[in-house]
Image (cartoon, rainbow, N blue to C red; front, side, top):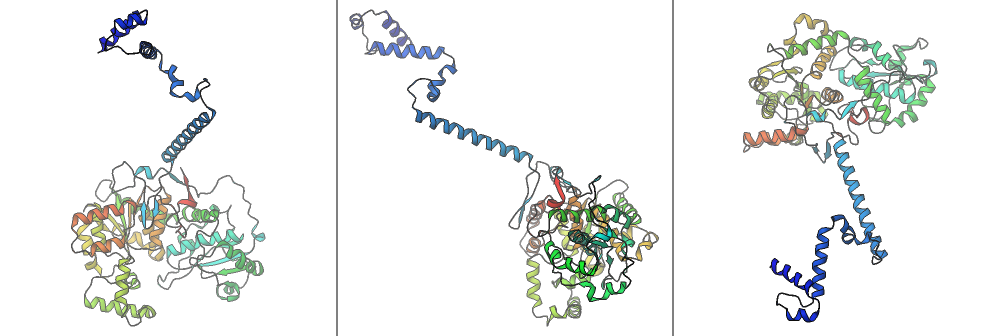
Length: 552
């Protein structure tokens, strides 16, 4: 067929007139020789021209020929500009995605985190999650302080830091923040004796006072004691005339300016009590929250002897096997007081349950009433994940996560309710459990026994330095540890078990081990202290990300 077309084309060009063409006509030749010649010649010319010479035929709206209408030109230009704009936005979105920091976001009760290509590790968070954020609450060196002299501030405030060591720590951070809000001078907080802890520790028995005052010298005026001109010091500690008592929980900064500051200006020196959780989080300026982080992570340092002993304990944990090994710190909250206060039901004999009922009735008579409603309350609390994990439950969860029997575990705990029998399942699955009493000699710890808070400080620091920290119930100790490890860069794993889901799994008699392992692993992939966005009424001490950390 190609040969026929070629010969017909030649025949057409050789025919000088229509008459001659009629004589030599063929069924394969076209009826109109001129059309045929034009088609083939134009096809040949198009084949020989470079591709860009056809641009006007492809996009006729850019041609200089008068056949293009202005309306078509405008429409084409609009679509081209739209395509360019969409492309620009897409490229920007891709670049922003590549440069965006690693951040987990809340979706209801589920925490969704960016995917990583790294294989999961038992002993650390993904590297990509540790490089996006850096601490930025430290003191700015070389800055000029604009603080007025001590005698020119609004007045003096004095607070009683109540509770255990960690509750006192939070109160101290809040006291500095409140002093800043009101431009007042802060008297070194008094660590009030607690009815449960029975401890009379002073601020200087635990914390480095000189470092505390010096580090904050550009933020807040702090003095060691009540000024000499105020002669009746007992009045400040006991008199209601010198006490501000109507401060609501999680009060905003404006409350202090409107209600507390006028009284300080009038009396010149006032005590604020009670002072537990008396300053909010999202209702204060960001720089005030940043100051609280500065106090917590930089200004409040334990005494050198406490720091040194904690370093020794952490070193002994890493070298228990004769060679360097990682270790886990477990904050086991299963003391008798915690079990009783939770009003949850736990496995035990009838005698144990009867004794616990009598204990609750004695300690919390208003909540106990006649005890008839407690069973339903206990079931509801367990479903909601508000009950402390038992030692045996902790052991099963850790084994499901993949931690081997040889794992070295430091246990920070009071006296466990139920004693050795209650601890047996955990010890059987993880025999390398130790406490500070087993790591250190009696003589080494004797110097710390005169202050209960000193021993709590040792537990705090050893847990803080661990490769993996595991909490079993809420509280100030656990959230301060998790927050500090996040502030240090999110690399250290801090496992927060999903107790609600675990209660359902433990209560399912048909769930096999493989299914349980899968549930545990998948659920806790995002519960390891990763960078997490803050939300209204978030807890600053557990998640310091937004006010206290910056993009790296």
